[in-house]
Image (cartoon, rainbow, N blue to C red; front, top):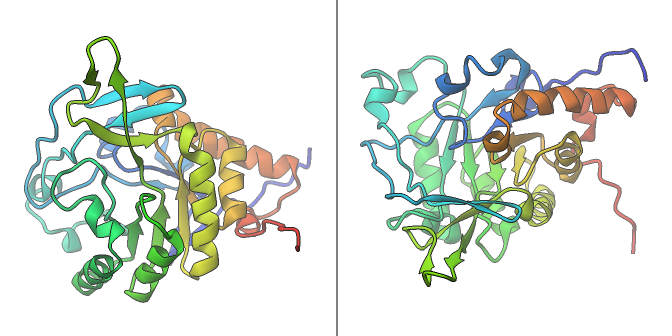
Length: 282
């Protein structure tokens, strides 16, 4: 194994990350929940739980269940609201925020939610308005529940997004055969985990061929090899979500394993993996 330490830095929308591993929204709380569990300087960054203008209670339980290769959730965007989050400051003036991830793709809220991410014109309008509202980098989180992910990615890029993240969860459901009732109070929810990885990987590949802005890949990433696959498909960085429920140290572990993978495969710069998939010519 080469002794040379690989360069793990990547640049995302003008932000330099120590490595490509980011903790995903909704799975990492507001960050403080993990400060005594992992070392933040050993991961690339984290996305806080989604924040809305007013506090939201979310859906009643049960709103999270295990599936054969992942999990279903219907949290309903529960959050404390922007005022409490930034202690009476507005986000554009708050410290410690590097960028915004705009969620246009939540599949388990009744108003708005997935509708923005599934309608090209609504998506363009929303991204343009968000772009006008801030000078910070704007990352748009896309829904996989669309006909063409490439079209939606291009709509974001053309409307001023600095990067896109994909994919969010897939709309799904689970039924209890004994009670003949849905297992989630909301009936449907978002499917995440290893079950969605092959589809998410394909979508990252298609989006990367359609836009030139950076992509953050997510969907069932558990191992270093998973992260490498997403980067080969065109992702600049990756987000880890469901894996953190099974292993709270997943993000830090993955960052360490990704560095070891690069060393063992003689990859001097992890950024060299981005979009380097070798596709056979037909």
